Length: 103
Length: 308
Image (cartoon, rainbow over all chains, first blue to last red; front, side, top):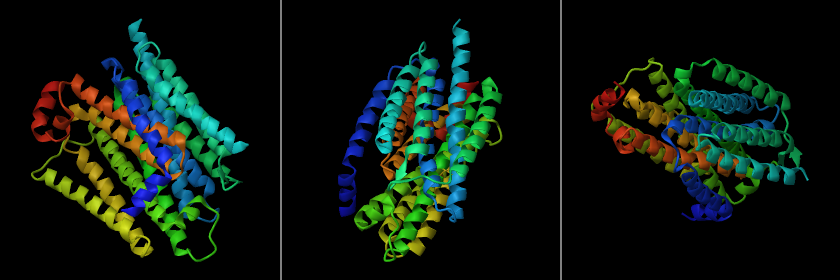
């Protein structure tokens, strides 16, 4: 039990961010028209691609002879980039279609 | 200097994610919102590559990083441009699965790193932020919990998204059998039990810990498949949205791991907004989330009726 308390204490500022972000996320989304559900899902999908930053850090600090870490990190960078780039491009295409329909 | 610029960049990144989501939820600003979030993301990625410091040393392996970025970028743009308008949801599902896989892979490398540090605990300590935290071994247990969370959620989301993609493209058929709920619950209980055991023993016997870690990884992948398999095809968008918010939480765990605020805010925002969005989508279909997830056997007929 003690280590959980220690961990929470050491990261208390991050935990505040988490709690505030949870409420913010709920507030920001709560009044969205149903036509925008799928684009919003896609946009959120692109945003969680921010995990790519973790992959870059993993790659960037791996020792040059640590091949397992390099290969896994390399895969992670590729997958994360596909998530980010593909996510934003797909969302843009969806919204483009949406705009065209409205006109 | 560099690191203070980087923290400003992360601040800007977090703000653009919030603004982007806000604008995405209104029809006339939606497209601009997407671009705002994309700009913030690019800034955060470039900032990390050039300004991130591990104990005052810049990152290395730039060749690998840029090759990965270019390959991923080309595949991402091509697949997103080529996909047919009607096939968008499965594309989103596929991208989501890749994000989940990315989170799981990161935690595999970090766990391996942690185990190595424990094994050389009395050897000269390398200059790494994890090594400093290892000095207080109680804190390293917290690290293991975060790594495990990121691994499990990422793996479930990855496997689940791939099954969801298969269902939407018609490659995977609905499949359910008697006692499936018990099997699901059993696998989930096993994952949780093994994780708790791993947290208790990893400092004492790192070798066993590593094996248990990979068993948990495989079980989580298996659970992801089991989780999505019985759910009807008509409910897939809801499930994809739910898995999307899972991946958000996995990304946020990465934020904890590196004390990285932009990963944390981005991940948690998607986690909470994605959950609310999932509930809203259920409401739009006149169903409850519980109905979609648990009532999958009875819901099969209703789902077919809704789609037909």
